[in-house]
Amino acid sequence: MRKLKLAALGGGLATIAFVLALAEPASQLFSLHMSQHLLLIAVAAPLLVLGGLDIPMPALASWAIFVGLFLFWHWPSAFQWAALHPLGELLELGSILAAACCFWSGIFQEGRASAGARALLVMTAAVVTDLPGVVMLFAPRAICVMPNENAARFGLGPLEDQQIAGLLMWVPTNLVFFAIATFLFARWIANSSSMVTS
Image 1 (cartoon, one colour):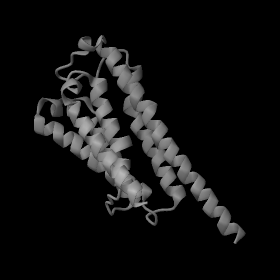
Image 2 (cartoon, one colour):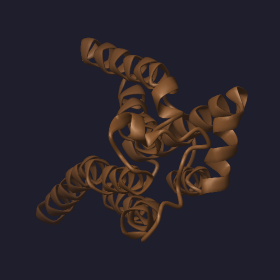
Image 3 (cartoon, rainbow, N blue to C red):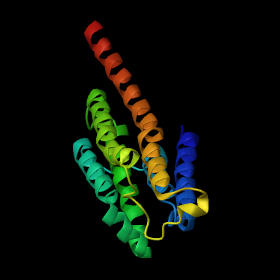
């Protein structure tokens, strides 16, 4: 068990290092910038929590902090401001990571809510955080671009770049959220069944 925790912690730290290494190309490609967010939320933060990081906070409070910060940093003027200021970018990525760690601590730690309640929190977080991705995917024009946008360098137009970002927010991230929610629902049903039979 200790080796698994160390592996998870190492994986989380390696993911953070990778996200920071993407800083230069992510300043020119919106979909890559969104990938930084998603790697922190769906990979780094869960691994850090599974590796032993625990932020003692009620599950519902951590849900509200995570969803609120997620929606804030996916507002075009907010992430564009951060992209223009090196410290702002660190604030953006750092606060997203901290909020995600709060969220996953509330989800993974036993005793803060039932497994069924935690599954519902994961599902609702997935639905709410899908909203910016849906807008990005179906908007008729590019509304989310980096201040130094250079999608042409990567063979894309700004609208295509935005659509890729929306698709990334919608599909891969939801796979992580829904897999965890399914696991928690299954655990809740199993616990309920054992209580009924005992």
